[in-house]
Amino acid sequence: MERRNFVRYSLRLPTVFKWVDLLGEQQLGAGFTRDISPEGAFIFSSDAPAEGAEFSMEILLPSLDELSAPGLRLQAKGRVIRVELENQDPGFAVSGRFSSPSDQNAAMGEG
Image (cartoon, rainbow, N blue to C red; front, side):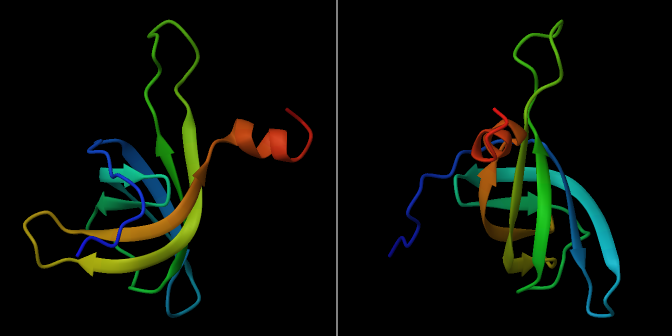
């Protein structure tokens, strides 16, 4: 039975993420999304945090116009819910809510 509340969209977008490892040290990783929804994503990367780890990440969206400003950046904080390192394409699934910097500014009254 399907348990997802949101449709996932197949998008390959560059992603950077950070987390604190089991030794308490900040780690930085990078990869590409396989799919994304408003409350989760799957990230292709061999730099996977441990299952259950809290993380923050940024997904880089391309600009719609090559001559305009850089594309939008989606940001999220959440938790790693599954790690798949044994596959041909290693990666991990995350649960979290996405926002853009403009969403955050509007929420803070700066928009």
